[in-house]
Length: 271
Image (tube, rainbow, N blue to C red; front, side):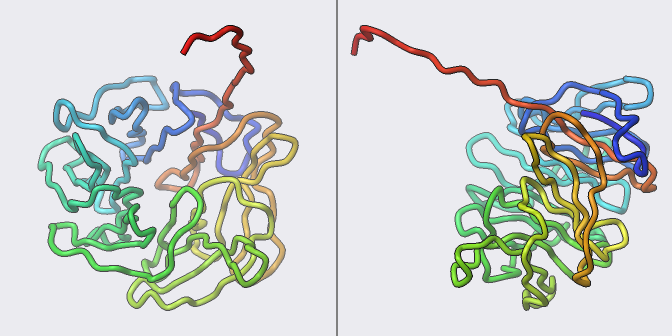
């Protein structure tokens, strides 16, 4: 996990904590990260290196943490057999199960902190459940492609995600849809081939996603008005798996790294 100034393009990036290729994290309003390395929720302070465990229940598999804007609620995936969406106080108490699906993932707290959006992995549909619990509703009939990640705009009115347009040569498209009705507001091509999570920019007027060139990932910002985009970072190595701006917008944190693999030859293997 790295931290950099939001305006430096990554030139001052410094490593703050170990991660894996599938580590996801959230900033908290007191300046910490809560992350899910090794399927456990932990926290780290990037300024002084202090760290600790975010305790829920023993035996839980935990992931995809997201702090709500109310500053005292954390939503995340949890479960022993099947993953579903849970919530807890930012201090670790008040644990409550919100969904009961078998493949729920990617919980995103609504900007007003009154509900949680998530992906029903069995259908690919975005769902919404009240933060206090209750029945879930399907937000959109469209099925998300790729990793299943999506985002909700800062004003809470629009969600952004990727779909495959089979009528246009199976091209991946960026979809913007209303969170209240699921109606598609626009469906446009990605300006650059996307290689990861799509997030709204802090002002809600553009989306940001990783792009890969010469096996190196950088963040690309694509305005929603159709104007030309721009590259936000200038990294010379590594891939990007997750990224978030700090609550005040002054810093950018990223999970960056690479995966090593080898070719192995086996001779005279016995069945």
